[in-house]
Image 1 (spheres, rainbow, N blue to C red):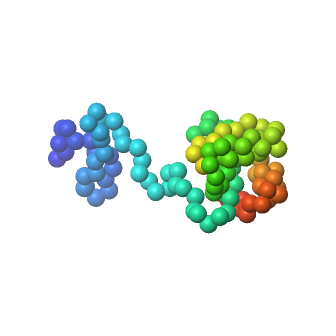
Image 2: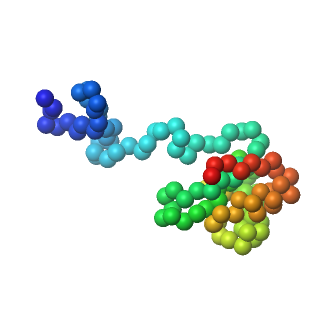
Length: 120
């Protein structure tokens, strides 16, 4: 029989599984290994299309770039101008609005980066 204060989440064999709760009964952020994993340090710039968590809007995500904040900001400005689109930087990840993978690949290759189209 279950405890009255228990919050059963999922069970297939009658075992108990509990949510991780903070002292204020808020769920803890996911610790799943695939959430915002950093890109491998192999020197390859990866370009992928993403729509998750953006209200269905498509953005092109660029990971694997190295440099200071000022260098990444300058590169972001250059790439936004090349695509004629807006964008932002989150850490060392650049996001350009729309599906701009081919244009960005060409531009980054002319700048001397090794580029790989990743994802779908």
